[in-house]
Image (cartoon, helix red, strand yellow):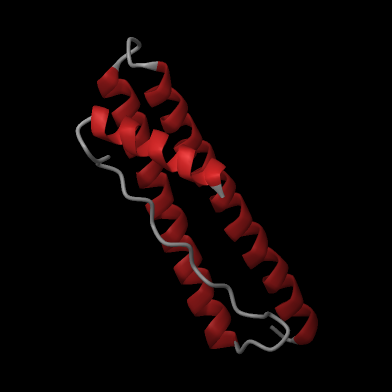
Length: 115
């Protein structure tokens, strides 16, 4: 627990050093229905939500890239590390959401062979 507090304090200090807040807001993760029990409409809605989420995340990644470029190569190491962590976390989350949707899509197709 104490380690989390130290990390949080370090992150807060880094944010305060670089203008108080980052311009990039990471989109909220989307839910994926259980493919084995979902309706066709629910799966279509989920596909649309996942597609929109991934597009928003691409915008977020571009924003992070712009923040890194704006600080330049001389940006403090803490800032660079934080931004790289934000970028990598976003990519990991995108991969997780896409994999979850694909897994549930396979389950949906197995439960509904006519679709």
